[in-house]
Image: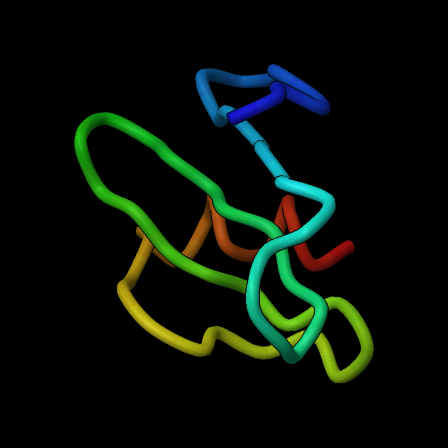
Length: 57
């Protein structure tokens, strides 16, 4: 999956023809989350609170 960003140990990836709703994947220290782009909430998975705040900012 194409990497969009890598910061503070958080890897953000997105695949252009993935399923709806539009989302990106965030990985940090073995933890993964799918984040809705339009609404800004976690669809599936979890990240530590500090890293989640960074990606939602």
